[in-house]
Amino acid sequence: KTLEGSPNPVSENEVHQLDENIMNYMLENFAELENFWSKKWKCPNRRVVGISGKTCIFATCMHALNSKLNPDLQLRGKLTPNPHMSFEEVEKIRAILIGRKDEEFRELGFMQVQMIIPKLALLRAVMKFFNINTVEYVPSTGGCIGFLSLKLKTQIQ
Image 1 (cartoon, rainbow, N blue to C red):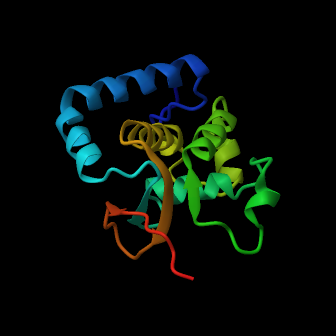
Image 2 (cartoon, rainbow, N blue to C red; image 1 turned 90 degrees about the horizontal axis):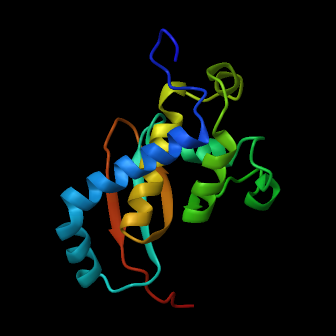
């Protein structure tokens, strides 16, 4: 929609189509992996750790969740941002970002504004497909992309 190739502002319909495309791709290409994941980790509350740098999918979502756009910001804590993001939070913040222009994203300090909605769509799809309830973002130097899978265990107190 712009000379830089940014899709912003995106419509609800465009995001819905992107969701369908991602989920169809995952169903066609990762059904066996999801089956393996489900059998290997029979945990209803899957949680993963997302490790990467400041422009990664996880940092983008954290930035949105801790921005003034999020009406629930006071619940997350302004001084010590919560490094966890739930599936529900990812969906909610993505809905808030639909229809916004590049300039709005830049004013809020987002990086790679053309990638915000696609990154959140991909994060949402992976969380939904693999039934991941929570992602914890751990910043790192460099671009070491990945999910570190954690089995939730009862905490010993």
